[in-house]
Every structure is written in structure tokens, then in C-alpha cells.
Length: 456
Image (cartoon, rainbow, N blue to C red; front, side, top):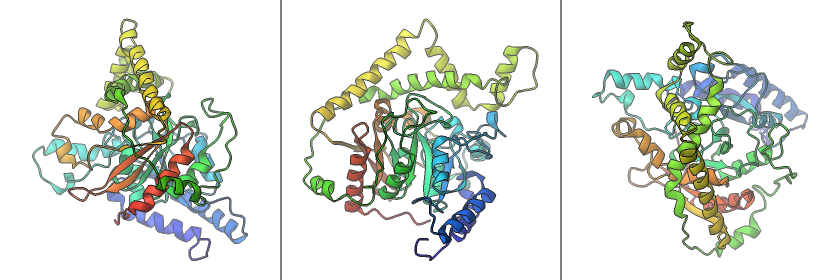
């Protein structure tokens, strides 16, 4: 676009056409065609007048359906919020639009981002129903690979080249997990560096807006737009953030240091407890956050009016899937007066031990930790549903969930294609608020591996 080889409107048209051609991938649940064209026309006018708003001016983006978008339905792929139109944009969405980005649409996920396979939302129901009808069928319609989750729809949208930058939430691995499966760069910033105002919450103490791109440079550009204090989010850093002008441009000094890096093994001994600890904290906060969705204050309400209690129960039975209802039930159990000390408080103590493990490793002289992102390549849907999917999906997040509980920055980058030729990723974890250093190391690694981009 800078060289005049393509205009923002032409690029927008090509991406929208590709979205229609790849509809079978089930990546988008809402396509904002009219809004995208308006934004593209405005971007083109600015381009002709040489008044670009920034590096993202005219660039197509996709946003996960749990971020508020003004004038566009935001339902977290749940019937509970079906038809809900937010009055304003999430802070991060507004920052991208202020840079001139083109919003292609909202992408698929697990209902309320509760899951790690992106098959538990209302827009994926058709695939689950086919399997129930033909439990022993080997129909090709059921023989597909899962993208991971809960950011699966966004990852597919990126891999299909329907957008160039994507925004999602990262609570326990929702960005890095799909990135590893789909040959993408998935970046989770330090907790507090990026505002989560306007992100419909899952776990307030761990929710962070996540970044999906095809290369580290793009992730750095997006982070430079999103980072900084937000008056609407008291968890964001108070100190002013210096512009990340080095991103994508001035890696030389640190890259020379990386060439002589020393590799040592360290122990994060409490990682094995991270899955259980995460689930107790997650389900407890889910019970609190979803409490407002009772059919009275927000969302869908059933027709049963025998009593308030029956209305509550019937409303939630009608719209929430088994995963959401199960987490609400478990969370309320953990928060009971007689269970509070034994579950929630203990989980908080374990969370502190996990955070201390990372701190001890970094105090030992480590700059960046290297681990797998996930434990296996993408799993076929038919194979996945044969086993205990809850245990299996959670175990795959063992390296990502611990990082979220410590509030550290982490990035997944494509690394290899073992066995079946399916991609897997490696995760790099850095010191809190050392996102610059972390992305520099990721950039160096990316240059060494030169991993090929998926061609649809």
C-alpha cells in the first residue's frame, strides 16, 4: 500500500471475498462488511493526502467475539447474550481503529472463552450434533483437526489470510495454544501492560488481551499500539510507556548478545500443580462473573415465571452449555463458606508459589525461559472425543497456564513439524514488563528457524 501497488479498498475487497470462500472453516461468526468498506474508504482518502494514522492504517484485522465492539453484536458465541450490541468499543479495539485498522469481523471461540478446543460455542453446535447422530460414522464432515482454543476461530482467520492482525484474550493459553497449532505467533503481554477494559471477563486476575500475527515484527507493531495506561482499567501500569520505536527496526545490539547466549536448565517445581490451581481460581471467578447473567439484569430470559429460582435455573439451562454450567457449579462449591479455606485460599497460595518459582529462576540469572507451548500437535476431532477431553485439553495447557498465573509475558513461535507434518510451537517466557527483550529473542529465533507459512 505504501508503494501504491494496492489500495486499502482493494485489499479490503480481497479479504472479504476470501472470508466468503472460506466460510466452511467456521472462523467468523459476524462479518462487518459495511463497516470495513467505510473504514477502507477513509483510509484511502488519508493515503492520497499522505495523512496516514500509523503502521496499521488500512490493514484488515479480526477480533475475538468477547471484546466489545460498538454497533456490532458481541455475544461470546452464547445464546445468553445473543443480540447484544455494545454501546462502545473495548479500549484495545478502539486503539486499533484509531490507527486506521479495518475490522473484518468477530471470530469464533468456545462459549464465554471456556475451553481449549473452540468447539463449545453455539456456532460449532452443528459439528457436535452430527457426531451425536452418527457416533460410529467416518464421515469426512467429522474428520477435521481442532485448532486449540479458546481463540481457535481467530487463529483460523489468520491462517486463512482473511486478516493480517488479530486480537484475542489470553487467560490460560487461549492465544498461544491455537498459535502453536496454526503456525502463528501468539503473544501474551505482561499483566497490566495492556488494558482489558471492554473484554468480557473470564478470570479478572489473569485475563490479558492477546495478539496473533504471522511474524514477530507484526506482534511488536500491534503491541506498540495497545500498550499503555488506561483510565478505565486500574490494573494497567501508571508509568508512561515509551514508544516502542525499536520494534522491527533496531535489533542489532541485543541480537549480538543472543548469539553468545548460555543455555542452562532450571526447575519450576510447582508447575505440576498449575492445572488444578488454575481450575479452582478460574471456576471461582467464573461463578462470580457469570452471576450477573441471570435473565433479570442481562441477557436471555426464559418464559417460565413460576418462581424466581425456577426462572434462574430454566434460563441458564436453555442457554449455557455443559462446560459453562459445570464451571459455575464448581465455582460456587469452591466459594462456599465451609470450602473457602480448603480450595480458593489454598489455590491462591499455590499461585504465589508458582510466581515465586519463576522469580527464583530469573534471579538465578535467566533472561528468558524456553518450554514447549503445547504437548502435542493438533488432534483430530474424532480422536479427541474418544477420551476424557477435559483432562486431555487441560493437560495440554500445563506450560501456558502457569505463566498466566505469574502475570509474565510469553510468546509462542512456530518451531517444527514432527511426525505427521503438523506444526508445533515453542514458548518463550520473560521477566515481567520485559516484553521488549522477550520479543527480541523471539525475533532472533524466528530468523534462525525460518519456518514456512501455511498455504491454504
